[in-house]
Image (cartoon, rainbow, N blue to C red; front, top):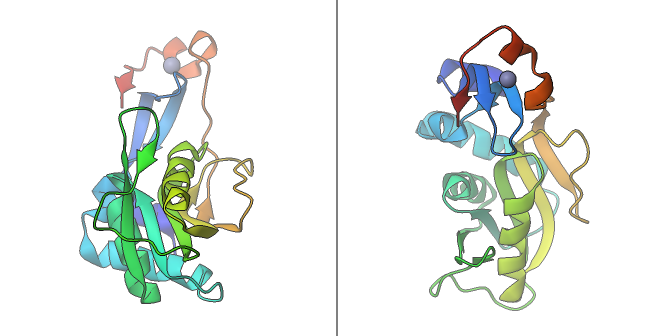
Length: 183
Ligand SMILES: [Zn+2]
């Protein structure tokens, strides 16, 4: 599966000059929500990630809202398990709302579209663990961590990409005068 091609086909791969949330500048970014709005693409992504974890044995999939909701759903659909999501708690962490029941000891897979530092998927893991879940894996569409993401459980992604990012004080795109867009 050519994941990058799917991003490109759906207009979810942006090229230019972008100010990332980290403060660094990048010639490229992936807007997964643009890709995942297409059910057929989303379903194919879900099946492919599901295959990476079909040997693991788990009871549910969880993703951080909002970006991880659709992804968790399609992966859970592929694996034949439940789909949950974690939400921001307004205090820098995440929680799993009432009605999304987790039984103590239930094994789960956490998913996120693009993992750079893994911060939000980590918060979703903590939220599910707080209700008694046991994380057995982390799945992603794209690993942008450069091999640095470590969750203490198997981490598998459909593809690994390393885009260059630049310090604003030393950015070739700034020097060329390419207009900067905030994302
Ligand atoms: Zn720049």
